[in-house]
Image (cartoon, rainbow, N blue to C red; front, side, top):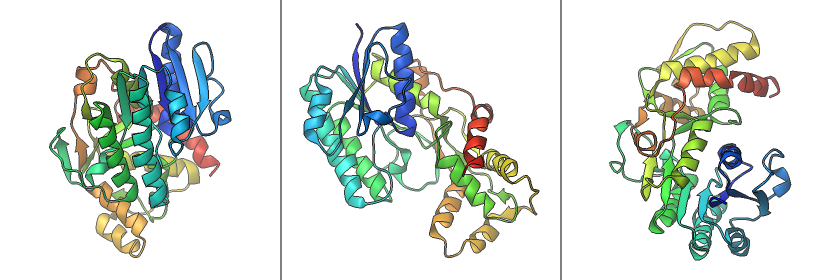
Length: 318
């Protein structure tokens, strides 16, 4: 039998893909995959199988974490609290990660890998930012507590993966949020010349599993993005394509950033996203692909096309 792997967050957008990737891999190279979920019944039915089990647990319940970690070799931590109450974020992302890491270390786990976010560095511009060159400057309770959780992992000798924007089947935030933003404008948005790091969720799942199993994985933080940054115009064109499919109507004249900001005056959420789109968020780190043997997957245009049917179905029912 291969390594005994515990995956948290198996019902979430990214954690579910990690669980599916690990389950598929264990069918070829035997491994024991244990999925931690607050509601085990919500774990997709295709995951359980030979060598796979689902156990109940909550990051706010240290006893459940100790039970879940019994006998594991590898921990892949994908669970987090995003948005909402600051106290919940602290309890889950910071204190919960501390309790989970302590339980994994006590159980004798030899590798801890945690999913984080590049937003722990705050707002850019970031242009070809290399690992170790950016200070932590989180701008929200979610990012602050996730940065604190990262420190818990790294203090234990673990590895943290930090994507920027993650897209693909299951995404209900990045691309759908972009479509909602564009739909509130009278015409397509001219976003300027900024560059952005994105990664397909399946490639990210492969990187998390690869980092957990590769002997070359180093302690500390990695950025995990497709090697080619995405021009903002390419990202906006994907949103416009979905918007056109959803409404079936033509769009008006192109809207520049200054006009868009004026139209959204007094709407902080929209202004926040406009500022993000207009600012470089490009993180450069080829180690996951060069050293760990992981596959970055297709570039954004091809990757988005693969997920277009899923996004179209989501928007049709929203």
